[in-house]
Image (tube, rainbow, N blue to C red; front, side, top):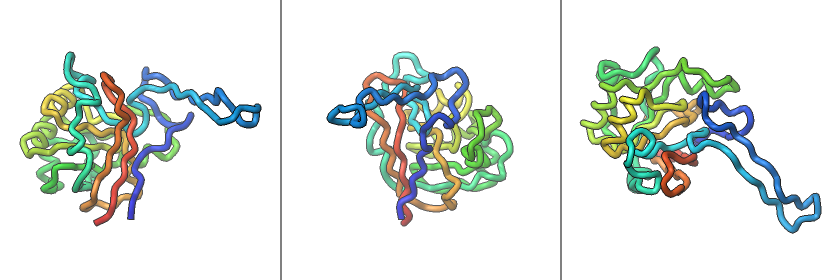
Length: 203
């Protein structure tokens, strides 16, 4: 079974405070006599489900096109972190257990925030010490179920190690366990991030 964990993007999708708003406009319409429907899309590159590039927090680092495609596809573990109230720390990883996997998605209480709620900064992210644990363990991709993996320090630890930071997945319908991950960020040359379609397949 394939599970789409991408967040639908429309006017109600929460957007990080200060980021460009979402707008899609039909500029050519069959109903108006055009041969085809054509739309114009305007949004920030960190809208909805998206991938951060190293450039997002590291000046002069690579854009989204420099991410290794091998990191975006393969075995993945969904880790149950719903018991964590604040940021996920190294101690939390020890307590809840960290699967032996190169790609890890944390299912937290955040997933419920996709249920039609406005943007909030009250969400669970990854603390810097936990980010370092992930780097030391050789994790290639880490994902969270809201719009940020964590603080600027957390970002720099992950992105500086060339780890893929996947943000904004919806794990409400996903049970913890082993899956196969397919993550397809748009190849926007020189961009600090890109919206992505993310799928999990049960094993």
